[in-house]
Length: 302
Image 1: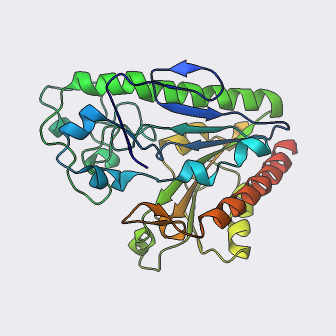
Image 2: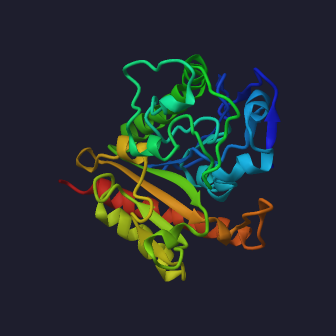
């Protein structure tokens, strides 16, 4: 359900910390696993000033959401792994980017020299502050000022990655490494980009640079034996989070998981489909499979 937040609204982190950013952190209960789960795009708390400044209606603004993904992986804390979710929407700020991937055409003033204005994601209109929603429609009715981007990045982007960095450090201190699972969903037509029927699941390891192949294979096998169609790195190989936190030579693994939205929701009405509950149960089993694969990999002597 979309929530419109009044200016200066705050939420508390689930572990008792507070922040200006809209974050939710559910810490593990009982036994700990060498896993961290992150849901950067499932946020549906829309600032009222953002909705007012958009040329799109509230339903159209939701097209970039990975709706309900945090709920799909909600079993993780009970099984021993933290789950960090951004509650602000991706259309407002995308934390799966560098901090300053910005399109100069969106702003009325000049951008500082440190801004990355030439990345492929910026050219697509999907930078840290997105120009378009997922179907290509322009978000804003007028140009922004850089101070607005700075406010969002300081208030939301950095707190999210500070929280995520703490989680991977804590996990690494206990297990000597970690597996970060970056959780996403994709439009049902996304797989057709490759000229084939849409996959149910896309696993991304940045083409072998972010995650050990044994972990990727364990994830692929889990879904395949249950009848899901699985693609690897196409059309999604992993974003900033996978690239930044994954470095297998240091036992730091990151895997991006994309779930076809048609499996669990109506993409027009944003309502859960009847299969939602069974997918939640299957993903709880997936947590266990990943834990075994990660523990085995982290216990090996390189």
